[in-house]
Image 1 (cartoon, one colour):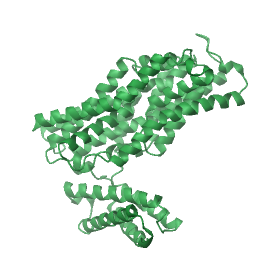
Image 2 (cartoon, rainbow, N blue to C red):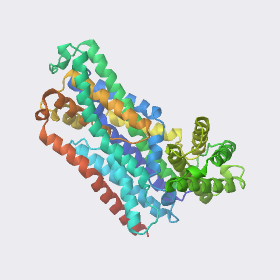
Image 3 (cartoon, one colour):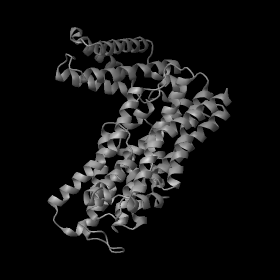
Image 4 (tube, helix red, strand yellow):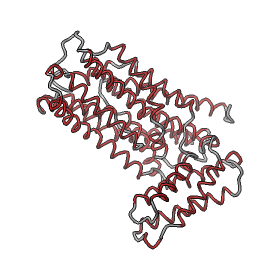
Amino acid sequence: MLGLSTGLFALLIICIVLAVAFEFINGFHDTANAVATVIYTNSLKPTVAVVLSGFFNFLGVFLGGIGVTMGIVNLLPTEVLIDDNIAHSVSMILAILLTSILWNFGTWFVGLPASSSHTLIGSILGIGIALGVIGHKSSVNWGKAQEIGAALLISPLFGFAAAIFMMFLFKRLIKNDYIYKEPIPGKTPPTWIRALLTFCCCSVSAAHGSNDGQKGIGLMMLILIVFLPKDYVINPNAKFNDISKSQTEIVRLMSLVDTTRLAQKPDMLWYTDVNKSLANLETEFTKMISFDSVSTKTKVELRKSVVVISKNIDKLISSDNLTLSTNEIAALKSNVTTLKSTIDFAPDWVKVIISIALGLGTMIGWKRIVETVGSKIGKQNMSYAQGAAAQIVGSSTIALTTFFKLPVSTTHVLSSAIAGTMVAKKGLKNLQKKTIRNIVLAWVLTLPVTIILSGGLFLLFRAISG
């Protein structure tokens, strides 16, 4: 049983089932983001809309890569995930999973469009903070947490403003008054409007899958690293010879840097850290012929070195003090990408499981959130133009953040975009204050509640397990 005891194997299966459950709930929690507009404009029947959305969510998981996944995995340092006492690591995973599921399901039950991204990030941060409370030296990658926090904060505000601009653009470019009217109940719109809104529904669904699907993959990777570190700390398919050559080439390129130009203290610290980690890799590489031949402890050290190298080289490249030519910087980036392939990976079977869970979840339980998003944000039902504007802004914003490898709240981007279209039509008075207040309240409360709940559960489980 994968080298695990019966008890640990059973816990592994339970954790995988919980991760799949999280993604399943994520699917029906966020379905409204894609289907509310096509349903409330009578463009598609609800059954057709959710099935179509589920299919494109499924595809989106495979189109989005794993950049967001790695951002989630790297929030907690590897040495935190792999505790000498595996019961402590399992306590961590269970706390993250249970917190994420409880808050996601609870907000869905009361019909609130809360953020799965906020929920998961808050759960992970709760673990890191709890570890700091008990005296653990390395608990949270706060640099990555700040990046993610900024994306989660800015994206709804951007969605709101962009939707207002999109409505202004529509009115300047499209003079057909029909698309600015509220849909007639039971009457389908003209074919070209149905086609536009259906395309937007598919786009949002694919974008949602590409971003939110990676959160489920990230959870699965955390589970696999905790339970099966020897197999998943380092990519089992990484080609040792290619990685070794890239390490050597990075050493050569770093030797070309004029250190006298690294005047600012951070630049020199980044440069020094890179060279130390490169030396550590070189020392280990001379002792091995493949990644399979080394211990789990060595693999953990290799992973840490690769993280330090990639993170600090990114910082150096963004600095004005790095004295390398354009071609040399391109070569540096290429070799760092090859080096990172040792840790940036997710097995295909994980992607398939999460894709199916997200796709199936999208087809179930959609009605509660759809009613909130479709008819309770504004005082009037959405017009065809409002539906299209909100979907275009939503899919573009989500795709952009996925490109920059950051998780984003699909729920809040779409909700804020719909609110923006309502404001563009008749000002702030066109918003339903109670709904907006509840959405904002869920947005504000999600992080502190999940941080406290996750941290508390972790400390409880850790104490019980000894």
